[in-house]
Length: 145
Image 1 (cartoon, rainbow, N blue to C red):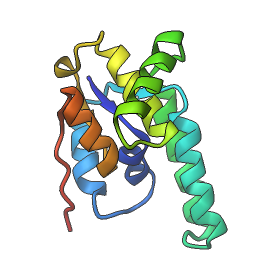
Image 2 (cartoon, helix red, strand yellow):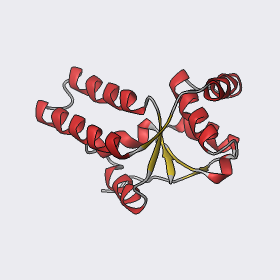
Image 3 (tube, helix red, strand yellow):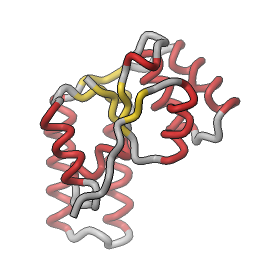
């Protein structure tokens, strides 16, 4: 099981340069572990692209359908005091946004505070840098044509 942040799930919902690579990773290990708010973060990404008219209405519907199917099968790390405390610490030591600090804290708590025991998948460079410094093993994701 790997921890997937929202940035790594969005390409599973709509076609991006990393979609094929991430699809292969998901197929190889379908037990996805995510933060409790990941579905909201993914919905936000789809809605933003819809507002910007970067996705046509049919693609928006398909993306939300894919999100619902994925969310029905993934495992969520629920909010807790430990996650909030870890997120606050991460904000003090890494240049993260609040949502990214919560993602990292959820992975940290899911790994039972032993980051090297859990692989993390993210496309967010800031989150990846913080995760590396905390000791997580990151799954490299390269764009595939």
